[in-house]
Image 1 (tube, rainbow, N blue to C red):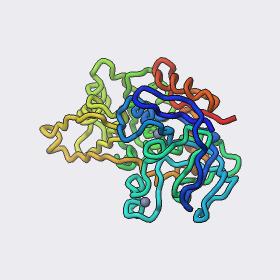
Image 2 (spheres, rainbow, N blue to C red):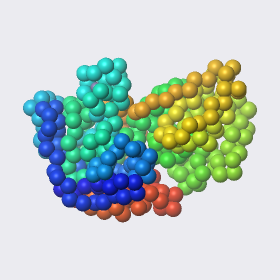
Image 3 (cartoon, helix red, strand yellow):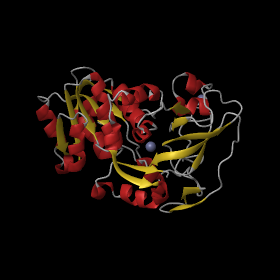
Length: 346
Ligand code: ZN
Ligand code: ZN
């Protein structure tokens, strides 16, 4: 089969690779019909994720068709259309039982990270019963690729951790795919004010279609002042960090209201400054989380019922074999006005 193989920092190739086989009775083999590229794949290619070794097939998001299952898989059979969750869950360990499969002792984020991933014609999915989600007949399977990772990530790490409530003022710092997923799913709770902040005007325009009531381009370094002006100098009840950089984490600290939440989603490669001299007395809660993908089935229902329209996040479509071209477009997201790129097997 063909697959996108990591060849060390800065190097990737679309090449022939051995087809995966069932290794354990709980495995499934899935034919990938749709996949996408994630910001974390770019982090891996930069060399920021050293546990990814040369020769690894990348990707952790996909929709596909089950071609084979091990004898211990009871929920899925060949021919089933499925969403491959970015989080593998054994369902039995302490992490899984605590609703925290991101810290599953035999799973978590392993696809395209510690084991071969979904940017391939076929993928082996361990613990298939806990790691696949059945796609109902007739669903828009393009849109469902957004359920592998970005919708649960935005919702669980941003909205649930941030405890968005009706009437809240919220700010999402970073209007990339995950920030937009947080903005979109925050609307379940009817915040009164949803502010999107980014340096890219195109993304801010898109944010308006996902519920942003106000947008701020932070290029001038004055976003905090703008948020304070919009909120009557109060700040926001929930500041969601969806970038993973010191400057955006600082901005969230500067705009969170007394009693508010700062919910981090971003993948941080560097230390950030914690402004305890101002935060200590402000009853602020700061949270972190790796997506657990425990809300996947709920999010699937909201997409099937058109409460959410994550399809709008797909800006580019490629054939699976044009993987390298898709990486080039996604890697130049601002210039290409790219959010999510969809790769489809023919
Ligand atoms: Zn991802
Ligand atoms: Zn587990």
